[in-house]
Image (cartoon, rainbow, N blue to C red; front, top):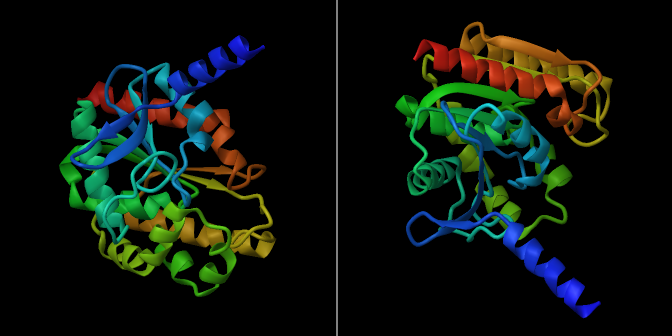
Length: 255
């Protein structure tokens, strides 16, 4: 029994994604697949890797993929404060270099992670081949004072650091225009999930307007709506993986 338990824990420890040194700071990262363009996933609030497991596995069948934990999440080091979008963008750039992942990349962002990705794309436009917004949170949503009341509960240490810098991140994201002239896909889930800011059907109408405003600023990207998926379940929709793979294939064919 003891031997079996020991073997289990050794296997579990060996299966954990490695910690990658980006220059005095380590980030937990998982690379799967081969090929170009690389697809990089930027997590939402809480910066977690696990919601992307199935999606990454599907996309990795076609090209190289990267999922990582932002500073302070999971086993990633806390990193220097403040934990703004610009600091996160510098971290991601350092991670790509440390892993030998050669830009330009397709950046797939989710929820509040799209504020971070907008800043990365604006600050490093030559390193972006395409961008996929999955249920993207807008700067105005996170500027709403209700956000602090609704979300600032039971936060992990990493989330508290990002939350403390949220006002700066919102300002950075609002200033992060224009974005590079690359292919875009915007994905929107339309089922309420009972949590702020997507509690009821009326909230979803406001959410859709935010997505449409993003579409207008990007200038005609592909828009995919999932009426029966909510903000969490949308990541497991097969058509999300298909849209990312098709975008990557189109970019590769044009390169």
